[in-house]
Amino acid sequence: MVTCLFDMTNLRPYQAAQVSQTREAFKKHDGVFFQMHTGGGKTICFSNICKSARPPVWILVHREELLKSAYSSLKRAGLNPQVLHPKMKDFDPDADIVVAMVQTLRRREYDLSHVKLLIVDEAHLTDFDSQIPRFTNAKRIGFSATPKRKGKQLQLTEFYSYMTVGPSLKELIDMNFLVDCEIFTRSVIDLKKMKIKAGDYDPSAMFGEFDKNIVYSGIVSNWLRICPNIKTIVFCVNIEHAKKVTDQFNQQGVKAKYIVSTMDGDRNEILKEWRRGDFDVLVNASIFTTGFDEPSLKCVILARATTSENLYLQMIGRGSRTFTDKKSFHLLDFGENVDRHGTYSQERTYSLAHKYNPKTGAGIMKECPNCGAYIPGSCKKCDFCQFIYPKTREEIVEEQLKPFREGALSTIVDVTDIPKMELIRKARGYKMGWIFRQMIAKEPNKAKNLIIEYGNYKNYNSAWKHKTLQRLELIG
Ligand SMILES: [Zn+2]
Image (cartoon, rainbow, N blue to C red; front, top):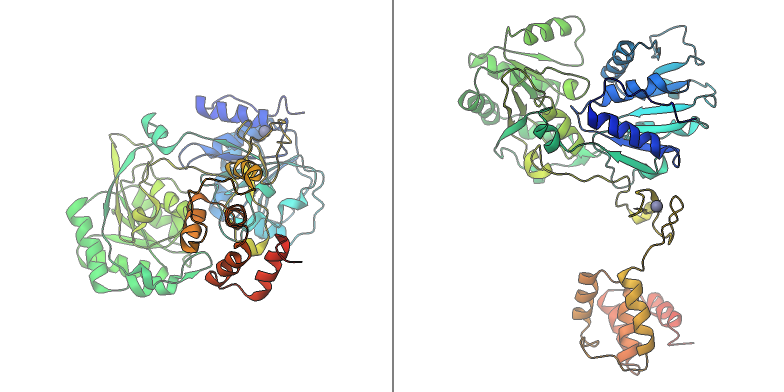
């Protein structure tokens, strides 16, 4: 079924290679993640995949800009996608190829069991999690530049058990598909005060910090000093902030205009004027983070902070497209984003499994060192390639300790020095059991008291002490 899934024409060599890898991976995996940086040509890859896939194919997106961009890319590839969007009437859920807003799909009760291939754009986002299981018989490809989740979010391994990774930003720059950036940073706000809300800095708290005369004038004066009169985009905290930043540029004699989500009519007109160079500085809040391309753009100003590496790379990635004579672009960072997320072209590693909050009970996944598949952390053998895991350091330590139980252990550690034992345990990443075994092996007569002392040191209650001693068979 997968042999003729993809059409390799018109792809750059690295794109064709990654599409091939994805095809190979489908022999073993139902869900494959396709990591590719902004500017790497993600859309052409998935148009290509759609073109040769066995229908029906569905593409899920979460923003109108991405819906438009996917739709026009598929059209260019000679396909005729149906669009699922609240404004579209006469939608046919049995169409061969569908581009759908995930928000709309949530409200429609279609049977989706006939779909053969599901493509999710910006698949690192949780917006799609509730809808993916509805495609009961589809293979899945998740596209994203930054497969990274955190905290209580579902593991990406819930939907994808393998990942293909595209070239790094540095490699794309070295191949002349992107340009690098010159970074200018200045800390203008107190981030310590800022609360996190819905996974990022609380916009109203952030606005409070950025909405200061000195910050406004600093943005304009730095732009005038470092890179005046070049095509620039400014990312702001919110709509009000965007308006005020625009005013500041205009007051200082630099023609600037803003585009915000609440505007309808003249939005496209302003964009056209900016594209053709009628004015330099285009201000927005978060409209142009995705699905927007203006290669002649040479300066990105971050007049906001974000905890999201993805959003950070999306915003500055707008400046990295190649254009005649463009050797680099400028990044003016007023939100300590470079400190938080690193430079544009630094090496980054991604994983479908993230550290999680143990309270949620989500399972930890690990990557198979032999075939790259994601498998449950407790597995000793990979289901996909039968690789058998070597024993972990801790397991080896545990095994070797057993024969020494008689008290023959060397006296490297003084087991009565509880704070030091705890330090060693943490430094080596051992579990608590290591301390207890050491105590029992070296001070068999004092072990019971030492464990109680350890419990006191950790402020554990008497029930803990009782249970632990029972488990270690030190009391009946
Ligand atoms: Zn494996």
